[in-house]
View 1 (spheres, helix red, strand yellow):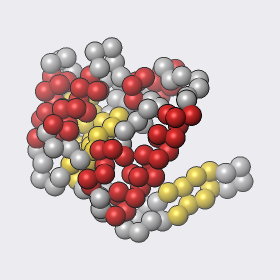
View 2 (cartoon, rainbow, N blue to C red):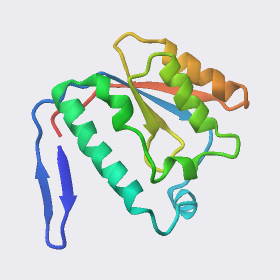
View 3 (cartoon, rainbow, N blue to C red):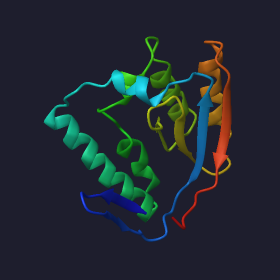
View 4 (cartoon, rainbow, N blue to C red):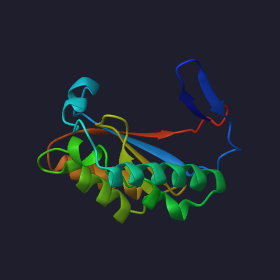
Length: 153
């Protein structure tokens, strides 16, 4: 389901049944409140960065609708918030890289953080372990949560 709020109403469209790989959410014990997380974002973004993210969003919808998992990594590239919300030691950048090296199809900070959202091939157990190692080196426990995708909206 894709939706947007106009001044008068909410518009929505239900997409064809998505073809979504396994979703693994990685939740570190590293609180990041939305209010605090928004404070680190710039008040303005470049036109090129905005276009980058808009095109990636469209690509992500198409990739999930058509089952083109080969496009997930590129479609989840971000220029508007992830680098700003990362820690000084770049733990999220390193975690996402570890996820890809372990076979993730796509990975990103979910919302304001600190949760990571990953798309993984069914049965892959390496991604969670690889990301756990990154956080363990910083003495940060994590919780791995495989999710069942709700395709009913």
